[in-house]
Image (cartoon, rainbow, N blue to C red; front, side, top):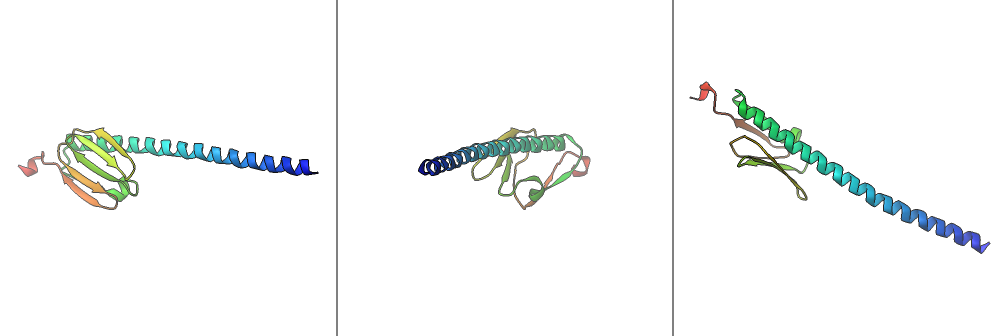
Length: 119
Protein backbone atom coordinates (compact mmCIF):
# COMPACT_ATOMS: atom_id res chain seq x y z
CA UNK A 1 0.00 0.00 0.00
CA UNK A 2 2.85 2.41 0.76
CA UNK A 3 4.33 1.79 -2.70
CA UNK A 4 1.09 2.94 -4.30
CA UNK A 5 1.09 6.17 -2.26
CA UNK A 6 4.75 6.89 -3.07
CA UNK A 7 4.16 6.31 -6.79
CA UNK A 8 1.22 8.77 -6.75
CA UNK A 9 3.29 11.41 -4.94
CA UNK A 10 6.12 10.97 -7.48
CA UNK A 11 3.64 11.27 -10.38
CA UNK A 12 2.19 14.48 -8.91
CA UNK A 13 5.69 15.94 -8.46
CA UNK A 14 6.55 15.09 -12.09
CA UNK A 15 3.31 16.71 -13.26
CA UNK A 16 4.08 19.92 -11.35
CA UNK A 17 7.62 20.02 -12.80
CA UNK A 18 6.23 19.51 -16.30
CA UNK A 19 3.69 22.33 -15.86
CA UNK A 20 6.36 24.71 -14.59
CA UNK A 21 8.64 23.99 -17.55
CA UNK A 22 5.81 24.48 -20.07
CA UNK A 23 4.83 27.78 -18.45
CA UNK A 24 8.37 29.11 -18.90
CA UNK A 25 8.37 28.18 -22.57
CA UNK A 26 4.97 29.81 -23.13
CA UNK A 27 6.15 33.04 -21.49
CA UNK A 28 9.13 33.09 -23.84
CA UNK A 29 6.88 32.59 -26.85
CA UNK A 30 4.64 35.46 -25.70
CA UNK A 31 7.68 37.74 -25.35
CA UNK A 32 8.81 36.90 -28.89
CA UNK A 33 5.33 37.61 -30.26
CA UNK A 34 5.22 40.98 -28.48
CA UNK A 35 8.64 41.88 -29.87
CA UNK A 36 7.58 40.94 -33.41
CA UNK A 37 4.41 43.04 -33.09
CA UNK A 38 6.45 46.02 -31.88
CA UNK A 39 8.87 45.64 -34.79
CA UNK A 40 6.00 45.60 -37.30
CA UNK A 41 4.41 48.62 -35.60
CA UNK A 42 7.54 50.78 -35.83
CA UNK A 43 7.92 49.82 -39.50
CA UNK A 44 4.30 50.79 -40.22
CA UNK A 45 4.73 54.14 -38.45
CA UNK A 46 7.85 54.77 -40.53
CA UNK A 47 5.93 53.98 -43.73
CA UNK A 48 3.10 56.28 -42.63
CA UNK A 49 5.53 59.17 -42.07
CA UNK A 50 7.19 58.48 -45.44
CA UNK A 51 3.79 58.66 -47.15
CA UNK A 52 3.00 61.89 -45.30
CA UNK A 53 6.37 63.38 -46.29
CA UNK A 54 5.79 62.65 -49.98
CA UNK A 55 2.13 63.73 -50.03
CA UNK A 56 0.45 67.10 -50.51
CA UNK A 57 -1.30 66.88 -47.14
CA UNK A 58 -0.48 69.88 -44.93
CA UNK A 59 -1.04 68.44 -41.47
CA UNK A 60 -1.44 65.13 -39.73
CA UNK A 61 -2.95 64.45 -36.33
CA UNK A 62 -1.38 61.59 -34.37
CA UNK A 63 -3.34 60.09 -31.48
CA UNK A 64 -0.99 58.17 -29.21
CA UNK A 65 -3.81 56.12 -27.70
CA UNK A 66 -4.79 54.87 -31.17
CA UNK A 67 -1.29 54.32 -32.54
CA UNK A 68 0.78 53.14 -29.57
CA UNK A 69 0.33 50.32 -27.06
CA UNK A 70 -0.16 51.43 -23.48
CA UNK A 71 3.12 52.37 -21.81
CA UNK A 72 4.97 53.05 -25.07
CA UNK A 73 6.40 56.23 -26.56
CA UNK A 74 7.59 57.32 -29.98
CA UNK A 75 10.53 59.54 -30.95
CA UNK A 76 11.18 60.72 -34.49
CA UNK A 77 14.43 62.49 -35.27
CA UNK A 78 17.30 62.38 -37.70
CA UNK A 79 15.55 60.05 -40.14
CA UNK A 80 14.78 57.42 -37.49
CA UNK A 81 11.59 56.33 -35.76
CA UNK A 82 12.10 54.87 -32.29
CA UNK A 83 9.37 52.97 -30.49
CA UNK A 84 10.27 52.48 -26.83
CA UNK A 85 8.96 51.23 -23.53
CA UNK A 86 10.62 50.66 -20.17
CA UNK A 87 12.01 47.32 -21.29
CA UNK A 88 12.31 47.43 -25.08
CA UNK A 89 13.32 49.60 -28.07
CA UNK A 90 12.66 49.22 -31.77
CA UNK A 91 14.03 51.49 -34.51
CA UNK A 92 13.06 52.04 -38.14
CA UNK A 93 14.18 54.49 -40.82
CA UNK A 94 12.02 57.22 -42.35
CA UNK A 95 12.38 60.03 -44.86
CA UNK A 96 10.37 62.36 -42.60
CA UNK A 97 12.60 65.35 -41.88
CA UNK A 98 11.10 66.96 -38.75
CA UNK A 99 11.42 65.86 -35.14
CA UNK A 100 8.75 65.09 -32.56
CA UNK A 101 7.93 62.90 -29.57
CA UNK A 102 4.60 61.19 -28.93
CA UNK A 103 3.54 59.28 -25.85
CA UNK A 104 0.54 57.08 -25.15
CA UNK A 105 -2.61 59.17 -24.65
CA UNK A 106 -1.16 62.31 -26.23
CA UNK A 107 -2.50 63.93 -29.41
CA UNK A 108 0.02 65.68 -31.64
CA UNK A 109 -0.39 67.77 -34.79
CA UNK A 110 2.49 67.71 -37.22
CA UNK A 111 2.62 70.01 -40.24
CA UNK A 112 4.11 69.57 -43.65
CA UNK A 113 5.22 72.86 -45.16
CA UNK A 114 5.63 71.99 -48.84
CA UNK A 115 2.25 73.07 -50.16
CA UNK A 116 1.74 76.44 -51.83
CA UNK A 117 -0.51 77.55 -48.96
CA UNK A 118 2.55 78.07 -46.73
CA UNK A 119 4.65 80.07 -49.23
